[in-house]
Image (cartoon, rainbow over all chains, first blue to last red; front, side, top):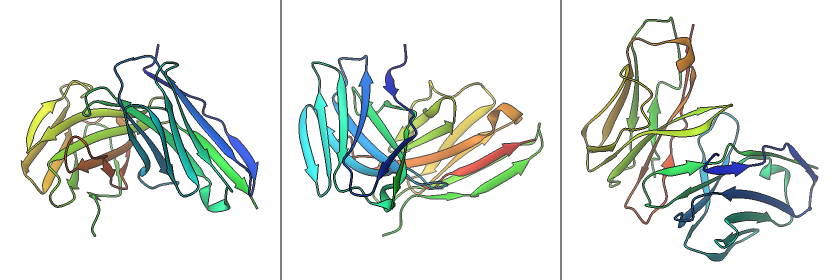
Length: 110
Length: 113
């Protein structure tokens, strides 16, 4: 079983839609959770960083962590064509060894 | 602010050749990470350094891979001899401390023929 599972998609939505991206994990010791956005031929760019559980909001982005279900989510409100990218979740127990999902490809259609 | 800088951006070489990838972390960051990204396996941690010292190299696939960090502003990942299955995008990331997130460079796209 992989440490982190992420649906690869692809996911295609119309502009303005709410997007929900999810990851599940198996290690109950994970306490650092991150979401990255990766454009083609670029490095991952940090979107959200959460320590322990709960919700975090930043502009159009909201990250949720449900440790009881071992499930994390990223919501994008009012999606824009510029949000078209691959979204990676990442998590760690000790803050050093991070496990990444394989990424979900998102396309926002104008 | 300058981000993490990697070079070269692209490398194409023949099987058996030595390959050296380079990384300059963000100034003031004390941890550096090397990752490999493939379609099948995603991003995998190869090795990371704290204060220039290798802490965990359990992700290095085999002895053909080696990494060094001679000072706080430079690190190398070397593959010798290279094989076609090493073809991937290699990323370097750095961070300020354990409670801060990692910041990635734009990677080196490596093709071994």
